[in-house]
Image 1 (cartoon, rainbow, N blue to C red):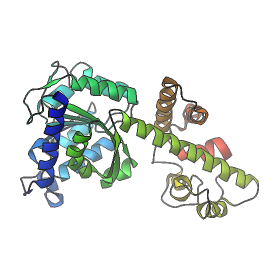
Image 2 (image 1 turned 180 degrees about the vertical axis):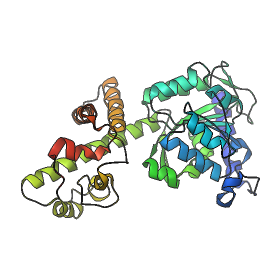
Image 3 (image 1 turned 135 degrees about the vertical axis):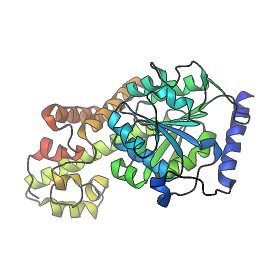
Image 4 (image 1 turned 45 degrees about the horizontal axis):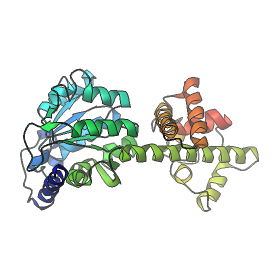
Length: 353
């Protein structure tokens, strides 16, 4: 009966979001010329925790969309940047929860997420009674942590009922697209959790991104992100190895890339994010592998994939090989370079094309 009531309530919220005639409301002055539509009541107050390279830009896009935002980060400079824009800042995650209908977290690791939720001054500091009806975690973490937190949240109660809904819900919603997509508001969200909550939260996702994919129950969004990045890493290794071998056999990398991109080897690592300097403009390999997706972040995601594979007893030899290669790159001092630097620093040591 409780599950049915929650589903009915969330569907009611979704219906409200899709039928409400939005009207202009008072924005933050800095963003008044860029506002889309003001949010409906269930999302009026949004808390955002984690203002790094991704979170800073995602929060900015929520502000542009007209949401009333309160933010928290351990970096005082990031807080000052928002405070200077007239945005409410808070000293702790708990304080964010006290003023928010929805809380979004964008944090570096599973341990950071767990601490923000259950640690001292965390969102659950007051016990099992919460104000936010929806928690969204967009961090890239292991599915097991996502599922544990989702269960913990489901055991809490709301301070104020939302229709028939008496308990808060959680979505794991990691993103793909990187800093440029976060800036442009074109991220892809991979979402796990109750489908009714996903449908209700779509306006939030579309304020920060272009695509949303519902992946199933709790933890499935996190699982999708780990698998996506695993495939991306292995693809980059395969393209780098093949291009390096081609050079050793006397084939120019630009020529071999043309072969790949008009043949069955074509993939994102060859036609959009080529790892060989001089082959493509506007990618990290064209600027000494600066910017892009840091090698240390790829190593972290591969660690998550390897751990998850072990926990479920899955045979994943490429996962462990990729994990070792990117770990070695970090230990060799390349952790801040884009992950496509594997071509130069692992395979070839050559820059010519």
